[in-house]
Image (cartoon, rainbow, N blue to C red; front, side, top):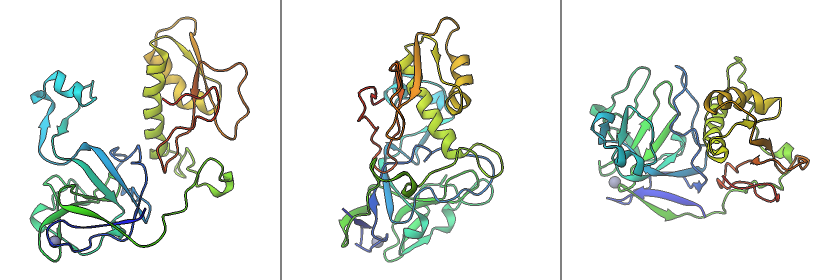
Amino acid sequence: MRAVFACAGCGAVLTAPVSQIALPVHAHHTYGHELLPALMEPGAYAVDPEPSGPPWRPWSEIEVDEAEARGVFAPVYALSFGAPGAIVVAPGDTRGTVLIPERCGGSCYGVDGRDGPNLACARCGRPVATRIDDCSYWQAVWLAPHAVRRLPADGSARRTVDWETPAEEREGTPPVEPSGAWSPRWEAAVGAALAHVLVASAGAPVTVPDGLVADTFGRALDALLPPGPPAKKAALVGPCLPAPDPAPGIALVPQCPRTGKAWQDHPYARPF
Ligand SMILES: [Zn+2]
């Protein structure tokens, strides 16, 4: 169902009609030192279930069990203890907002949201969102969860791309950029999948097939898992691939970027 987001204070509409998709896995990854494109495509929004924005607490002030309760098991510079549920949209889908000049801090080329919400409702002046456009960050507007209200919008939902959609109609992302560097989207996706493979390995060595899987996972698995005879094989399993024989111990299945659901139509496939 399509929705618009409106100011919780005065009711002014703050976005174009948008449909919900899964939060991109690279949403909070920073990359390189260039201006990155928009995180979200036009007409889409996503919700971040984790806390975001200030107050931030440095790692030295966070107890171990506090961090583990958040799913963080290795040191990070700081953790947000702001409200969960921020809504992210493409900057071009925002309506009726103005910058708050005294909150436009950033590191380099633009604003990074360090001071909290930097966009106000143009009608009533309440802080409602954070525009991020600094280098290394995905361009985005994050609506503050308690400052906006979701309202139903007219019009049909976006056409859904599913596993039956012909491959030529799906949007692909090449693993390597024209510059020759790894795609930042692939870097984040491979990093997230690697964590799942490590859990599925139960700490035993894993082999992967030659080619793209070895290029993306092989060195990291060799470095992170102990040497020895492989306990499991990991292989790609998906809607356009022949069924592997024998069945791999770990099936690497695709995840729908719209719904966030793992493909699991094959008996070998197990959602991570
Ligand atoms: Zn308002």
